[in-house]
Image 1 (spheres, rainbow, N blue to C red):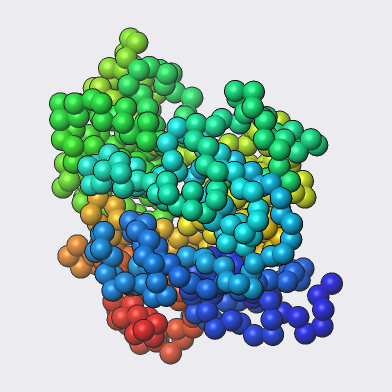
Image 2 (spheres, rainbow, N blue to C red):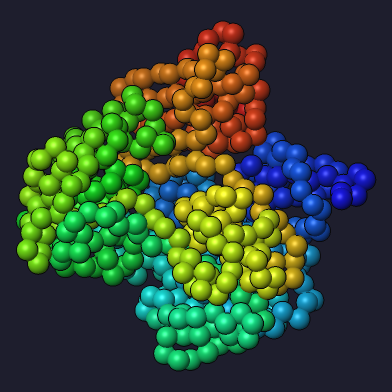
Length: 502
C-alpha cells in the first residue's frame, strides 16, 4: 500500500523512479528535465539522489568528466546535445550496510557499471568482476568502428587497468563460470576454482543468434560480437574478399559499412521489404537503401538465405529464390539471445531472460541481474544505454540502496554509414485518429507522428542534431495542439521543439 501523499515519478528516458510529492528538477541518472517524468504506480521504496560528474557521448561513447558536457565531442565531433549524463552516486547514496563479498559475473558495460556504482555506494564491499573474455572490458558497440579502422584496439577498453586497481575492484579476465551454487553462495569457475559471495550480480550478456541455415558451421562464417570475431575477420585480406552480411539491422548495416571501408566487395541481405522496418517506415528505408548503394554496398531486400554452400570453407550463399552469391566471408547479424543457461541451471526464474523486479532482483533475494540477460516486465532491451542504466541500479541495490528501474521507451540514435539516423516511438499511424507530418528534402527525411496532439513517434534521417530534443518531447508527452491546426512543416516543428528545449 502506498502511504497517503506518497507519489512516484518515472523518468521516461532512463527509467529511474523518483519518490516525492513533486517531480525532481532534473533526473539524477540521465540529466533529463522534470518534464520527462510521468506519474508512476508501484510499491513505495526509499530512493537516493545522485550527482552528475560525467557525460557520455551517445554517438561514440566518449566519456567526458565534469558537471556539464563539452561543447563538442573531441572524438567524433558530436554537439553537446548528444551527451548523456552518467550516474555518480552522492554521499547520500553511500550505504552503511555490511555488503560483504559481491561477485559480478560478466565484463560488459552492465558489469562495469554495476561494479562502479557498487564501489561508489560502499567503500568496504569486496568486489570481484569476472569477464569471460581474456581482455579487459571494452566498448562492444565500437567493434564496427574498430573493424572499419576508425579506432585502434587501445581505444576499446571501457576503463584503463589502473582504474580497477584504484577502485579496489578485482578484475578477473578469462574467468568462465561453470556453475552458480546459490544455496552455498558460491560461484564455480571452469578451472575448478570457487568464489564465495554474499551478493551476486549477473551481467552475462547475450550471444549472437545463428539461424538454422544449412552450412552455418563452415569456416568463414562468423558473427561480430567480440574482439576475437573482429580480429578473425581482419586476419583476411579484405581488399580482395567477397563478403556477404546476413541481416540488415543496425549491426548488419554497420558491419557492411566497415567491411566496405576496408575495400571488401560487400552484399547485404535483408529479409524484409526495406531496411530497419522496426525503426523506419518504408520511405525512410528506401532513402537509407539509396545511401547504402552509393557507399558501394550491394543491397538485396526480401532476401532469405536457404543455404551456405562450400566444402569445409564457405564458397557462396544460396537464397530462397535460387540465386547464388559468391562469398569468401559470411557475417551473420540476425539478432541476439540472452545468456540464461547459468541462471536456468541454478534454478532462477527465466523466461526470455532472467526475470527481475523493479530493483533488478531475481527470484533469489541476493542475486541481481542487469543488461542483455535481464528481463524486466517482459522486456529484453539488448542495447547499450539500458544495460548501463540497469548496471548502475543493480550495483547500488547490491550495496543496500533501494533504487527502482521503471523501464525505458525504445529509441535508436546511431550514425549509419555516415548518415545520421534517429527513430523513436510509434512511426506508423494505427488509424485515422493519428496525424502524420512528413517532409523530404535533398538528403534529409523527417517524419513526426501525433496522437491526440501529442508527439508519439519520430524519424530523423540525414540530420539528427535535434534528436535529444525530439526524444524528450516524445517521452515527456508534449502537447502540440497549438501548432497542428496550422499544418506546419516537419522542420518547423522540430525547430520549435529545439527552441523550447534550449
